[in-house]
Length: 591
Image (cartoon, one colour):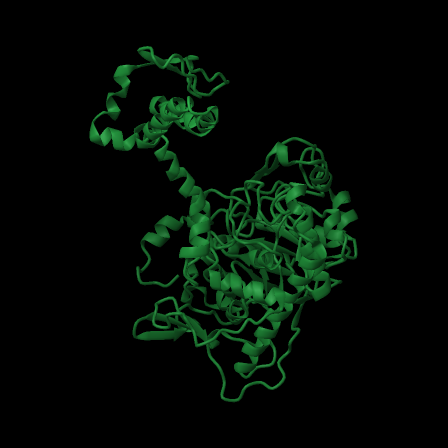
């Protein structure tokens, strides 16, 4: 008799009898009888081929026993063959997985190669421009710049310049001689008493909790060395954000982490205490995130450590919820009043919003609210749907929210058309990793750009895409101190600063090539897009860019006429029945 007794493992009794007893995980009964007739599925040449591995293992086991008369050391082979036999018997009898029931043991190789697939593809199969979400070429560029090694490319472009998604920046016969290599932009409306001078390239929002302590430290140290800002993400200001003195933009989401009362509502006193720290330069109200707009989030109780709980002002060991929407306001006017109160509580620092553009009339409603109340936002950050996250439902990541380019144009047109562009700054965030990406966003209308995953690459991220599992191989998106051991803050902080500096150097080269001095001088006509095999157009001939005050003076002549009419300063709901208006609109009207 051969027996293997263990909880929820296969149990084989008396192989010489007419049936086998196999214990199956998830089966309500302890044992399931297995008769000889069940082996009929594996008879014939086809069946034997499917059960080849356990069959060979069984034959090997018999051979080891037979050879044991020559020496007992042959029995060592049973250590390897018998587990395969038992596993094969279990696979034959289990009912959960079709493939391993039909191909015992061999079917499991499919799972093995599924696990290996990302690595085999990334290191062996993948072409330089094929990787997703970031190609090998993009990652290589960030790595080279963070290491201060050569970032030049030999033998010309490998891009298909005839493809429909190709775009380029125009250059001048008379290049600029002395472009600004450390360009900055001043942020702060006339209502802001403490404006902030920001780099045109900064670290986008990523929370402590989603990132490890070591990763937060490294990013902030890089920001301190390179003189750019580090957005905290909505997880609050941790001691790791403060350790190296890098400039901070405090992002506050619907959970009000770091400034909430016991019921999860905004606490003005806690907010004032942290917002008035010198290291906090601006405050950003997060309305939505590109990778998962309107979703909120949940940090499982197991991940709510004492440190994270202290930072977020939540109980230790309990689920930490970010609601879908804010409780502090429900209308555009209320949102502006909330922003004004935060500006006062922070002692006059710039306060703005971050959003992924969804319903266009809601963007217009924010403009109308500023015009109605006279309360100004200091800045708006547009987060593209291509932005990253630790984890999000696939449908939200792939199909909800407006991509950065389109969203940036909508908000740019809303500000310009409402006569507010000279008072409110505009930023772009979403899969930006190179000077070309920064330049295109600035040409469209942004004043500065933020990047998240690109800076993670700079501190060692390898795009393993295990951010949500707690098993990040580089220690960046895990709370496991053993995995964080490999991330040396001093080394990686310098790499983040190097990446920033080299990207600004490349941006200066692009600006100089265009015959300009500052990247803020770039305009839409500097960016060309190929729209077909035989046609390319400047971006302001593909999308419409509104002139100043167009929405105030001639809204019906703009492509936003219906959205402007639907916008209501006192509600995020449309003021008109859009379905009726849109259904009677000309079908060729641009959006």
